[in-house]
Each structure stands twice: as C-alpha cells, then as structure tokens.
Picture (cartoon, protein in one colour):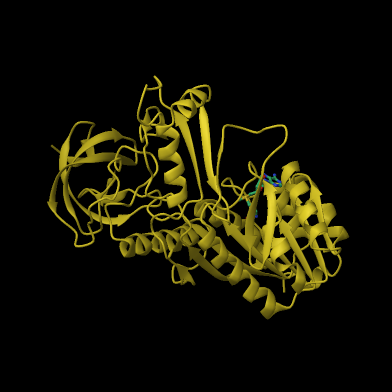
Length: 413
Ligand SMILES: C[S@@+](CC[C@H](N)C(=O)[O-])C[C@H]1O[C@@H](n2cnc3c(N)ncnc32)[C@H](O)[C@@H]1O
C-alpha cells in the first residue's frame, strides 16, 4: 500500500524524530507525512495505528513499542494516559526539558522569524517536577458517587470526568485536603451541590476549598519577592510559586542592570510584579481588566505606603495608548507584559510599537502566541530581542512559561 494513502485504521512503523509543542512525538513516513503519536520519546521505534488523517498530517496511537528510549520512565500517576493534565510522565524530567527548549527554539524561529541559531537562555527547570501546584480545579463526576472520589479532571477525550483521589502535581496540603473532603460525610453531601471545586494553598500553607465566588471573599496571603500580598481567594495567582519566584528574580536582576525610572505592569493581576519591584523605580503603573485584582493591588500599595504606584482598571488594548502618552520618562521605562494564554490583542501591540518602551519583558504561558507577538513587535526594527528564557512552571504537562526581553528603538534606530 503506498504510504500517501495512509488512512484511519492503518498500522505502520515509525521512528520518533522529535516531540512537538503540545507533547506528541512526531514520526515521518517515507513520503514525508508527519504522524503525531502521544506518549513517545525521541529515537523510539513504534508500531502505530492511525486514528486521524488530515491533509498534511495524521495522528496515531502506539500499538507496539519496538525500540524503547533510555529516557522512558514509569509514570507516577495511575491516571496518566487518560487524564487530560499530564503529557510527559513517561519521560525523564531532563528529556522533558530538552523537548520543551527545542520546541521554544523552533517556535521562535518559525513563527517569530528569529534565527534558528537563537539560543534559549536561561533554561530554568523546576526544582520540584511533582508536588508544585498550589491550586487544583476539579469538576464533579457524573453520576456523583456515594463514596470515594466525587470530583476529578476532564480526560484526554475532553468529555469524561475522571475521579481523582490525589494529583501528584499538587502540593501535599492540597492532596490532604482533597482526601479529607471525600472522607467526611457532611462535606460530601455539601459538595454534591456544586459542579466545580477549587482547592488552593497560599504562601502560609493554609489550604482553602472554594465552590465559587462569595459576597464577602476570603483573603489569602501570597509572596512576591520581599512583599506579602493579600488578595481575594478567587483572584488569579501563579500556580507554581517556586518558579514564579525565579521569574521575579530574573526580571529584578534586569531592572537593577537597566536602571529604569518607570515600571509598567501590563495585565498586572493583583500587582505581583509592580509591588515586588516598586522600590527600584520612581513611577509604577499597573493595568488590569479584573476589578477585584485592581482593588487588591491598590489596597496592597496603600498598605505598603507605595504612593508612586497607580493601578488602572481596563483592557490593556483599549487604554494602553493613553497610558503610554501619560507615562513619565518613557525613554527610561521598563514594561512587563504578562497576558493570558491568547497573547496580546492588536491594540496592545500597536500602542507598544507607536511609543516603544526602553525595555519590554514579555512573560508568556503560550510560546506560540509569544512567537507571533514577537514577530509583530519586532517588525521594522521597533524592538529587538535580547533573550528568550524558558521557566518550567508546569512540569509533566505540555505547558511552560517563557520570558522574552526586548529593547525598544523609538526611531527604529
Ligand atoms: C497571566 S495573568 C498575569 C497576572 C499577573 N501578572 C500575575 O503574575 O499575577 C493575566 C492577567 O491578565 C488579565 N487580563 C486578561 N485580559 C486582559 C485585558 N484585555 N486587559 C488587561 N488585563 C487582562 C487577567 O485578569 C489576569 O489577571
């Protein structure tokens, strides 16, 4: 059978050449069709069954592992393979980091149009590949069981909710709280009324269970470098506090080197970057669309008597033009950009190109969107890239955080 007629249900042998962004291994047929196969490692020879065929690529599942990689490991979770959370538990953590940095280099080259020789630096693995998460969001299982785990993660099929008794990615405190929830009859009955629960551990190791926003939100304590911040339980906070600290230190070192007078914290959430670095500059301005987060940032600034900090409520893409026009000392400014997974809206990119800041630190949880935005920011030499670093905020999953540092050139010089 000619391989260009590869169809769903066919079985074929492949050698895995690399691991694509998203976590699947990729093998190529002799006529160049790329086949994506989850849970494989570079160099492995596999017999696969084709499960999906598109014009330019196919997807397959392992039928037989014909040659094992030395990087293959026994997964630490019984749900690995069916749970929608983890993608790399079958690999050593070193192999996962190698794959992630190759993915970041390739995306920056292919979508960002930056030389393929560009070296990712720094590459910062997580000191804890497991037990790092300070938050779990779980969905109710249907039907709700009378005993045992009643909440869980959505599976890889994107439909089934897998009952989860413990998650190896979560902190000890969160797993203890989860187990206790299932053991207490009163708590079980109360939980049945809710579709979703969030379990969160704050910087003091206190664990909270939330079933949704309340009229009087509970406050948690989080740490941003030397400052302890208070924020509502439901507010966004980074899920891997150790790796977030590493990112804060990386950016602080740059602020110390470049000596800006003005700091902009765009998509600032509860003001983590702004409040952590406020003592190093004369003016601070944060922009954020979630009003409770703006409220928390303002309250912390008041508590620490940081009179030079302003937090503005609004969508960055709508107000950044005006914010930059009003920003004092833009020629010695440092902007941190930490958008959600979708990356920046065109209005944000346009405003940053029209009035370039001196230094831009782009913190991204989706490397493909980062690469797209770097390409837009750097067109016509308005910004140049100094470095792109990888901080592994989400070990064992397909995700990671990237931090790009750019220099702005007001006249394209
Ligand atoms: C990845 S979080 C970063 C938050 C903060 N930098 C931190 O580390 O805690 C992204 C933040 O952007 C906010 N956000 C989403 N869309 C926005 C928009 N269009 N304009 C301003 N903020 C937005 C979200 O509410 C969230 O707080």
